[in-house]
Image (tube, rainbow, N blue to C red):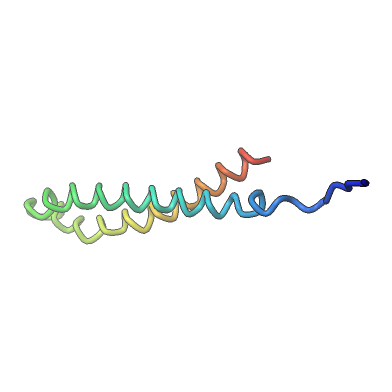
Length: 81
């Protein structure tokens, strides 16, 4: 029997970056949500300009989600090389 090796990468190798992005995005979302929930009451109780940061604090969640997804994809991609 002649077994020839395929030049195409295994399916799990091709989708590794996707799983890394999903995992990293989930971790980033969770971390951003926890930070948001912890600092919102503090900012709400503040006065002046510090209170205005409450509106910007929600940006932590999508920012950390995207950063986590990118970091996860890059990390898994580098580890699987």
